[in-house]
Amino acid sequence: MTDHEMYEAFLKWILEQKDPDYRIEQISDDQVDFVTESATAHVQFYHLEYEIVSFTIDSPKSEEPLFFLHFELKDLEHAEQLFREMIQSLKKAGSEVRTKVLLSCTSGFTTSFFADKLNDAAKTLGLDYDFSAVPYVELFEVAQDQDVVLLAPQIGYLMKKAKEVLKDKVLLQIPTDVFATYNVNKMIDMIKEALAEHEKMEEVHEDVHDPEWDSCIAIVAVIRRSGRYEIHYRGADQEAPLERGVVIKENLDIRDIEDVLDVLFIKYPQIRGVAIVAPGVVHNGRLTLPVAKINDLDIVGEFTRKYHRAFILCNDANAAAVGYYANHRDCGNLIAYYHPLGTTVGGAGIVLNGHLIIGRRDIAGECNNYRKILNFSEDRFDLARTPEGIAELIAKITLPMICTVGPDTLAVYCDLLTDTNELRDYLLRYIDERYMPEITKLKGNLWEVFYGAGVMIYNLMHGNIEYREELKEFRQ
Image 1 (cartoon, rainbow, N blue to C red):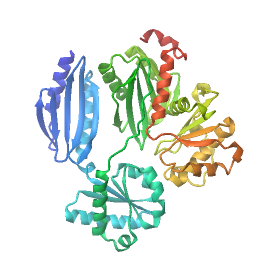
Image 2 (cartoon, one colour):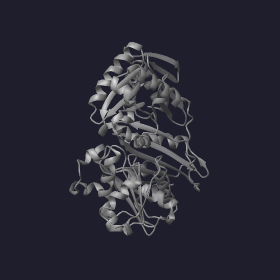
Image 3 (cartoon, rainbow, N blue to C red):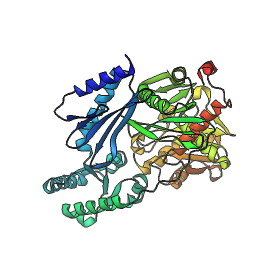
Image 4 (cartoon, rainbow, N blue to C red):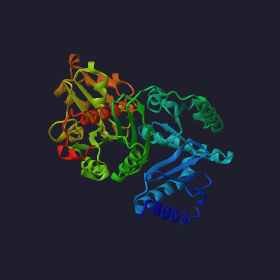
């Protein structure tokens, strides 16, 4: 089947889909919309060197797309599977575009009662608000999918930490008189006012520049956060940055990474090398990530043979360590500890005397192997859910490495760690002040991860590191 025949077959197939939850509008030969009361899904075809398909879901109630994915049309069964995923997201869009308000107190009991009353009031007033409540220990996990967060008066002292973690949320402390009397009208007025003020604020982006490479490279980073997978892609052609984007998936499949690569290579055939960043155990271009049911998958071998370009696979913590060290040469010996939100243990990248230490079969920094023998004051799953618990968790996980390596710097990526002094104080319970490394936080925008991955692929392409010589003939 030719590319054009594939396009015609897929177009015909999607036009034949019937469902009472949406109506189909064929805008042109290259665009078909699926429309519901709350959102619209756009299927757009691009006839480039190959057939490219993009799926987008948007809503008048959301400034950002609710769903975005693009891929090369080369397998009808795969395309149909992705279409079904898009339709599932479209059907859920009706509830997802509502303004979600999360209340939290120590136990979640009193705020649950208040949330019920607020839901009744919102329904009476015809407001598109959805109120729910959780105990404080669950706040930071659940809040990732919320628009507004309300803290009960009894935990108002935690507002500063909450603001550090939930920077992009509307965050309010419920006034004592409002909470004590369940004054739903005043609370709703406060929420409206805060949302209106939030919309007026201009978002300020930190001016972070990609390094200037002497050839065209790309980085594809798989980030596991809050139970989902984010596939970020970006790159640079010497001094000119390439497009950046992210695909969000509930589950991870190797085909998802291939879809990103297919489109990147069609748009930018000058790309000579790609760094793939992933969580899990990485060894010699192979990935083991049990949570995604990936076991010893030869990612570098498959991609190098398929695309005839240079590929390197690196662990996320190792990439962060290389990126940090490359920009802070005065940091000395370094441990970069990488702990995404929603996980009970992170991983570490170790740089000694300017060299990344990976150990036998890349086991260096795999903290998950010894976390079960550590003693914690509470269940480690609970510690990993709050800023108060995360300091103990990180301290006890990094302590064995600190005592073994004696680093000059401990760089930590963790959204929940709001104050590095709390981590320092916890470590001082076990080691003397004179052995304490300087503790710093990695950037929340993951810049060190991308930069470190770029350094690795750059070194591979310039012969500065040896990596899978049997694949040399497949590299451009």
